[in-house]
Image (cartoon, rainbow, N blue to C red; front, side, top):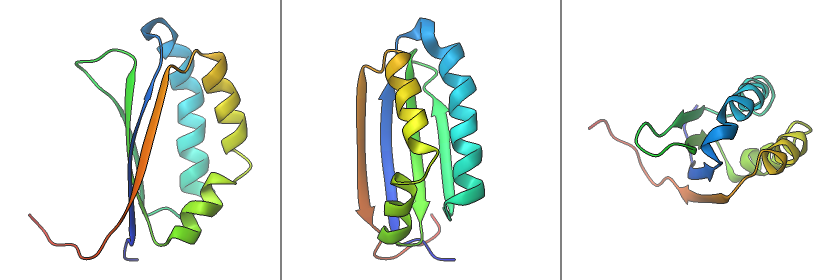
Length: 102
């Protein structure tokens, strides 16, 4: 399956909330892979900036991304994120014109 949409984003939480965030984030990632048709959905904590989580995602279409954003597991995650003190959220979707190995 070829990606036509790439998403890059960040979430920032108070560092003392990260243990709780991780538990719920794992459920989000698992549900996304299981149900939403993503090609890749990668999440990582920034080792140099405590509380910062980086996302990189590949989707086969804008429609698939839109379905993901409306999926049943998204709103519970958003509720948990707010409860854990979400401080910043930035995501940008890019159209993928072509890919090549580098």
